[in-house]
Structure formats: structure tokens, C-alpha cells
Length: 396
Image 1: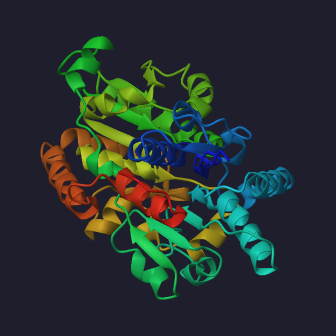
Image 2: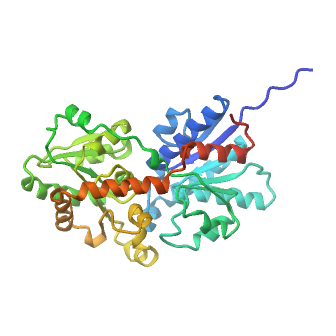
Image 3: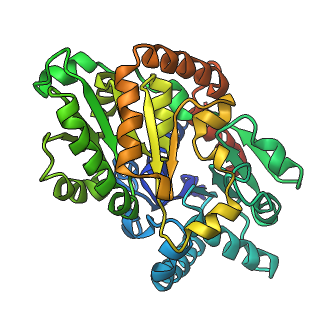
């Protein structure tokens, strides 16, 4: 009798925004390498995950919402997509479920599956989440809550495991992928974009979510208008992502300095290396800029209705990751009503005029790499080893 062929392991992986798409794609790439390509993927993701072989159940852009009142209009669709995803997972019966960030969506999927398991439904595969909720920044009680319905948590920062292990959740520090981000070639990008070698270059990064761009780009636009006459040879670079690139293009048409818009992810680090200073939305990109040594001003705004609630819940010292990790102000932060063109113009101007700003930023970047790195094993490989172990998949 012929023995049936062994089933190729299946990992169901979900990411709901651009940063999660990058992390998940790195995990997929490492799993393929470690298994010699003998692995399958299903789930929800973006362009980077698609490049690694994922056919997304639905567009990732539907999940890119943030904030209490930002989420509310999307609740009906969100709930439908959660139900659709849970049904798809149960149908496919993967060897592991791995969700990446995008907590408003991914953790609700995890929680529904856990409840079904607790009710006696056969859900033998492990429930793994990557990127911890920022319990050190706001609502620390979430650590106990999510520890009840996950089997394992993969975290990016070395200070995070203790928050969750206290509640019995297996937590693995895998390192932050930004710690090994490549050094870009600024001269190459300047030459390609016809930017003179000595021209001052400002990086403008208004966010990867539509809501962020809508709220921040008007203030960023006015800041550029104020800076342009002060720095006559000013050039502007805007690295962005496909999901908001058209919004950005529409928003900069009237700028006195026509920016170079870079939608290709491969250009990002060259752009960082070409910048003298940056103005950026709070998020992962500010950590990437800090690691690169770019002097950066950080800004953020949420829906005005969300702001009073956020002030009560959020530890504002932890909003900017570089500041929190190093215990000092590396990147000045302007939140909500303090995020004005007047304040941003002054802050960015200081970075252009301070000859010591870049050397201080470079030193901070080196310190951050030491904190976030994991030695000889890449963060994506550490994450892949943890997922393979959880799923019972042999790797080489």
C-alpha cells in the first residue's frame, strides 16, 4: 500500500498595515529559507507578503485604521472581515496562526478562535501574535487580558517579555528588524533625483495610514511653505507607501518646493541617507530614522474626539520609541494642538541650523542598534524559529 505524501506545513499569517506587512514578509522569507521552500502560506497581507507567495483573503487597506473614533465607522466591515477570516482559518486548519500587529483586527481574530477552543471546538494549532501591544505606553492592563487567549507572543523590544510573562504567557524576544536595516546611499539618490550634493534636504513622512495623512499633511505642507524662503535651495523627499501615495501626491501639488515622492520601498534607506533632517508621523519610521542618524521632529494628531481619552490613557513619554528606549529626548515630539506649522517650523529649523544635530543623532542610532539587536541571528530568523517550533515544523 502506498504511503500518503506528507502534508506541506501551512502557516496562516495576518498583517493589517504597511509595517506589519514588512515584518510578516520577513518572517515568511525566513520560514521558506529554513524549510527549503517546503511551506505554504494563507492569510491577509499586503504587497510585501504577496511577493513572498501570499494571496490575501481581502485587501490589507481595509484594516488600516487607528484610534477609538477612527475605528467606529469601520466596525461593521471590520466585524464581517473578522468573521470571514475566522471561518477561513477553521476551514484550512493551518499548522499555526501568526498575527502581526494591527491589534484592532488581529487580536479579535485570535480571541474568537480561543473562545471556540475553550468551548470545545477542535483548534489544535497554536495562536501566535507578533508585536506586543504597547502596554508600557498605555493601558498596561492589556498584558493580562491578551495573555488569556494567546499561546505565544513574539516581541520586538528586550524590555517587553516581563510584562506578559508575569501573567503566564510564553513570550519570546526576537529583536527589531530595524536594528539591522541597511545603510543607504544618499549620494546615489541625490544624483538620481537631481539634488545638488550640498542642498539641504528635508524628509517629510506623513504616515502610512489614510487618516494620518489627512490629519498631518496640511500642517506639514504649511511647514514646508514656511521653510522654503528660509532655505532657498531646499529639497524635499517623501518616502511613502502605495496605500497612501495618491493622497500624498494630491496634497503636495501646491508646494513651493516640488518634492521627490518615493513609493518604492527599496529607495527608503537611500532617502534617509540623503536627508539632513526629517519631519515624520509618530510610528515605526521614527525608529528607523533614529537608527539611521537622521535628526527628526516627530508629530502626531488623532481625531479630536479621541484626543481627551488618549491623554488619560497614554504615557506620552513612550510615544516616541527612540526617546523611551534611550531614556532621553532624541526626537522632539509635537502632539495634537501642539502640532502646528509654527512649532514644527521652529523645530525643523533648529535641526538644519544646529551643526551638532547629526553627530548626536548618529550616536543615538548606534546606541539603539545595540539595544534592539540580537547578535548573529537576524530578527526575522529568530521569529521564524519560534513559529516553526510552535507549529512542530522541522527546520534546517
